[in-house]
Length: 69
Image (cartoon, rainbow, N blue to C red; front, side, top):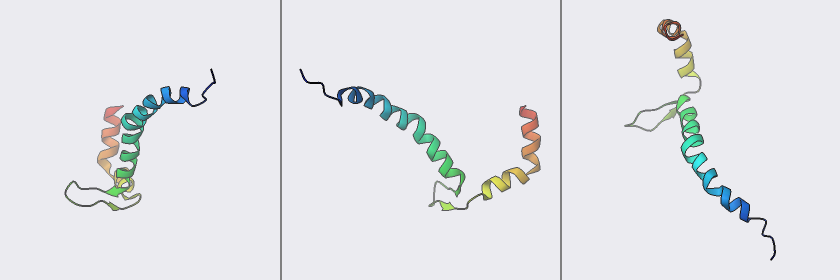
């Protein structure tokens, strides 16, 4: 019987698809949302680092961060 090199990959393929859909997909979506002004009723617009600048310059963020730690 001849060895088929692709058979082991076929066994791994469902796990890789599940990994991407349920783990890596949401991570990439969250990263893309971090750089956009996203609203469920409108189309997202790219704003770059503005969300992070607002976060780190907010006095509430540092107080909440200390309360969490």
